[in-house]
Length: 347
Image 1 (tube, helix red, strand yellow):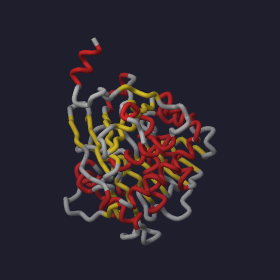
Image 2 (cartoon, one colour):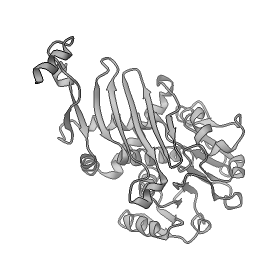
Image 3 (tube, one colour):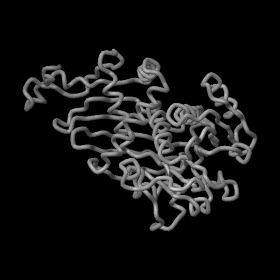
Image 4 (cartoon, helix red, strand yellow):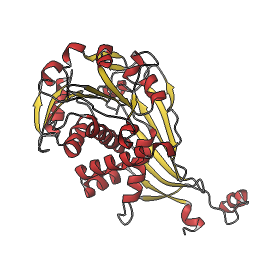
C-alpha cells in the first residue's frame, strides 16, 4: 500500500516524456493499444458517469472540461479549440489531463494531452472504422491536412490496414507538410488538388478541418454508395463539414448523443433523427454496417471516456520507465488536521 507521503507526490508526464514514451513503445503499437483500450471501455459503457463536456465559448474559440468516472478512477481533460491560433504560430488545440483515485480523491497522474489527444482521436476513428468500414478497405481520402492528419493516416494504417492515403487541404503548404511527414510511413501518399480528386477510389473518407464555421467540405453528389465517412472535424455548435443531405443518406454512429446533437454534424438534423451509439455496436447490442452499399458515418466529436482510456493506458505504461516527474502537488501535513501548522513551520 502506498504511504500517505508517497500519495502526495503525483506523477507528471511532460510533452518531452510523452514523446519519449511513444517512441519507446512505437507509434503503431501505441495506436493499436489505444484503440483496444478505448474499445474495451466502450464495451463497459454503462459503468461510466457520462455528461456532455462543459464548454466555455467565445468569439474566437472554446475552452472545455471533459470529466468521467468508472467508480474506481476519475478522469478529466482540459482542452481548447482556437482555429485563429495557427495564424499566430500557436496550436489550434492544446490539452492536459488528470487521473485520480476515487477512493481517496488523490490524483494519480497528471499528463500533457495535446499529443495524447491526437493519438487517441486517431485510435478512436480507426476503432470505429474497424467496425463500420467496408471489408477490405485500403484507400482513404484525408481532407484537412493539419495537425491531426498524420495521426489519422497512421491510425488507419496500423488498425484498419489501409495502404493508400489521398491528401487535400485548401492550403497546399499543409498538404506538402503532411506528405513529407508520411513519406517513410509505408503508405502510398497521393497529394490532390481538390476534395473531389481526393475521394476518387476511396472507401474511407476522413474530414478533419479546423475552421469554426458551418462549412460544406463534402457535397451530396460527391459521396457514392458503400463508403465509410469519418467526420472528425465538426466539434462545436455552429461548426460542420458535411452537407445535410449526406447525413440523410447515411447510417449515423455517434459517441454520446446529448453531446453530438449539439456539437456534431447531426446538429443540422431534427433532434429526433435516429442515430446509433457506437458502444452498442462494439458490445454487440446494435448492428453496424448491414449492407455493402450502405454509407456509414461516424460523427465523431470526442468524448471523455476516450480520454479516460488514454490516461489509464499511459499510467499503466509508466512503471519502470523513469518517464514521469514526481510533482509536490498535494499538501501533506504530519497531522491531517493541522494544515495551518504546516504553513507556520515552513516559515
